[in-house]
Image (cartoon, rainbow, N blue to C red):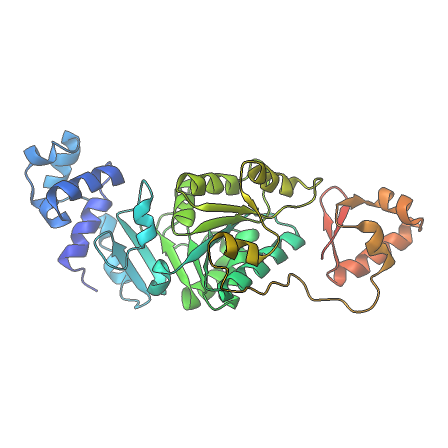
Length: 361
């Protein structure tokens, strides 16, 4: 597909090395459009940007090698490039300090301006955490909130699966070009999102997974959302950075509490101490967002029938090691290991690092 003159002008400027988002927005406010910026004199441009950038703009902006492949990518009808001048541009992103001049879209364009909630958490979530993320996402999606996350392993992936299972789908904000899937393990999930939801990136096609890109991606995850729900996170987790960005952007922050002994609960507990809303159900989120008229049904795990296994009562919901469990129940260690294996296969407990076990509700 041949690029139209308007989009080509946007690409020539947005992909020009050294011309940041803020400087480009200054030029747009002063001169009105990318075409007028490219037609301006060096003297006029130098009032807003450095001399070398002004010269580069006068010479036509970014080299064709940086943007010429976009036309072929747009041959796929599922692909779009949306600029600040387009009516489809997400209105919530206009409220954040550094909205990208353009974004690359694969999938449903209509989701960009629908009510949404970010769900984030650990890449190494527990079975209970993954179940919580997926269940909350499904319930909130059915209540009318599109689920936004970052396509990472763990909680992000579970949130996307839950969003897809609901009626309002999901948006994945990624830290690479849209022609690059990272992590590769989520390739199948990315294809499902492209088919039934939306993939979004501000990074040019071909951009690999660079560590510096993911914090920038995080500001869009919460920027597109009414609020941010943290499911499981360590104190040093990147999810807490996303939560802080959400607070800075005036978004609501929610956190699911966990065991005081779990490292993955400490980040959520820290957020709650700092004023995040403690949530135990999807309805808690809806009420805080003023959407209480949209009831959400949340069931984290299938109900069990009959009496619970006696060993489950001794495990409780906090992590426990084998020796402690043996002291509680008095059974032989071999019998405990056999019972734990059976319970794990039934999806009722999960093994944790350090030889510990935890019950899954």
